Length: 208
Length: 208
Image (cartoon, rainbow over all chains, first blue to last red; front, side, top):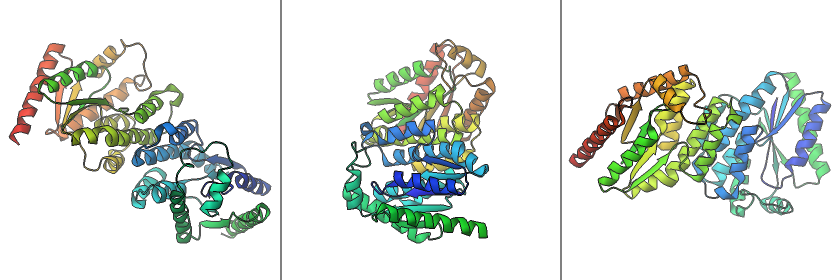
């Protein structure tokens, strides 16, 4: 059971990830919560490089390869071993974020990303992806309340509009895997919806 | 004019790179001397990660993607701009080293490396590659005289035998691009041979 949570800045990923974890644990599952880019010692070093202002202007291809390098390590050390022993893996962003940020945002062609996705992941894909969705205006306003804007958060509004559009497009194309959560609603409503999705998803798996 | 210098540890790359630079400059060329992994601020950070003992046991795919991330930045910032303005680029290791170390050495399939080579480089390939060749025994004995063995240098002899075999195999397959230099000979002889190769190569280019 490989669950990913996606969305632009300010959608409330951290709060809702903690909630999802609680739901899964309440179902009696071992939960491995992790994040991308990062999730391993190497991945966290790569994450630091990716977010550092000293690398503003990094070649887009280099950025993409770094993302996938972190992902390769993450899959090898964390995700695959956890899935093999039957744990639920709950991951804060995964390859959909690469399509959204590096593809939709920075303009790398989706087919070039797909080459690396296949190269690194083989057939591994998330079973369920929760897309927390708010308007860019709302997201950026919420994210702006945090102290330090990192390299990605400082990008322009138009960039995030492209990122959001790419996420929504991917969700529309893969309705079996994606659930879109309206994260502009009050937190209690958002979490009720998430709990419903997880319960439904758990039942569907039991039926299979 | 894109020239790469390859070889296992201890073949005398540093000394001979300086010599090659002098030869090219004596021909009146602007020479951009660079190295892989590295050659840019980002690349040097990646190089540090690749050589650090704290990452012993890194997933082989992650290592390969880091190499190509450094290469993408290097091509974008250094190699392509230099070639475009007509400079000679002299690079201490390039993609042949990836085939030799990650392919021959660590067992990643050549066809998987080729996917990334095409993805990152498009049609860019070196015009001339000097393979400095010595036996593994000689190379390791020479390299051992240096103070600190990095992660790659601490690998076993069998590893370097596979690396060397892969280099020689690649040279045999692409005789138009490769020149094998017997680097076990006295330095004066090695450099006379290098000077001869460069002179011949310069003439060939003038004839074209």
